Image (cartoon, rainbow, N blue to C red):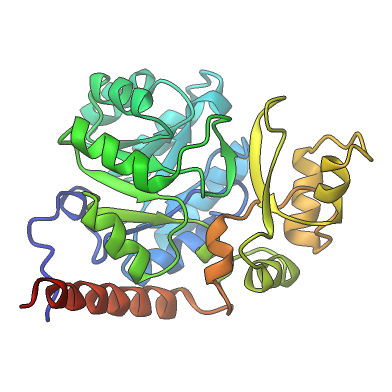
Length: 315
């Protein structure tokens, strides 16, 4: 069967071939990965959560030489601390799509929309979805607790959260958390999503800029080899389970993660130097592959899953 996305509102808003977003992972979602996703038909999203605005401006300029396909930028509001300096660069970049997260989307949504940019806000809860809808965003990224990195201490899985939000609003929804293939994508669509967002799967891709040991750590991880740090005592992070996280959980270290520690782990290859974000979907990832291979297979799996559903109704 041929997939028909002609009525897909997310694709109408973002202009890509496939309804697949690449999550804006700090320091990782730079031009190398973002352009690879864009050129393969997905929506690559540039990060700004690192706060490295000079570097990000260079990366934005580099994107103009790497792709003519649509791409996007993420604005994590709590990280920007009301520093509007990056906003002008985002508007001048020519992107027509921005995602916001970690704060009140009303801070920037109006100015971005006035510039002709669609704004989707990431939410971890029904209350957050309602607040974002009231702020006038164009769509939502509904993120379950299966996903990597920062999360709400009140963990809600994607299946329940997605259905709750879908019942509450008619806004276009992108589902995030625990999705690594076309079968997970089909499940999200069945619950009302019109696109999906993947982070961990793209970290473990050939074009990802992280050290091979990080990629291999994801590819070798089993179902119980991610853990959530700081439950109940601070910002929660879902990360790969390592000797460092085991020591933290046992109270054997007073280690406090820092950006420099994370960068050493990401790019230096020592996974015990800092916390290494990874989602539960790590268990579904077994190989390091090119982004185009990942996306093409994902869409084939999605089509396979959708085609198999009529058997359940006897058709």
